[in-house]
Image (cartoon, rainbow, N blue to C red; front, side, top):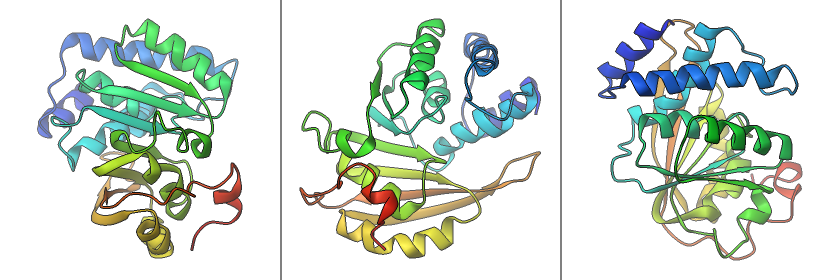
Length: 238
């Protein structure tokens, strides 16, 4: 995917990018590749592949969900900033909170945010389990998202405690999404979520299968969740 195709494919979805925004994506790519030489941020470093598999893929969240009315997004386990930083570039009104358990990734993201001159991006070096217990953040976000972090039964416990009532948790998944959803039904209901939609699509050139899973927060999460750090991964609610 070249830059013109990236721009046109987003335009076809109603997302118009200015020259300044396209320059921000280029600067993002340059910074990612530069930092990737000293820390493991991504195995994908080819420009056209990054455009499709990271940037376009991240923005695909907005294809099935209108972000115009969303104020505050929390991205759990963002890694090198996906999907939240590409979404922030495309939708500058968004307030973004990023949680990641590795300090070196937070250091990279801090540098990136400064370099791209992004406003209202907050970075937290924390585990999802402890972040979700913190009264300052618990049930406070309009939208919580996670991409390539864990299976859905685990993500429900990481993410649903952070979503405000009537807010959304959107999981960005690959080919195993439907199988994961079957195993994630119990945790979804227990933690206050209700499945709203599953959008399937394929990356336009590379053709990898993707699923956008929309889960609405319909009731408060019981106080005992999330459990202690490490427990959701070791003993998922299934």
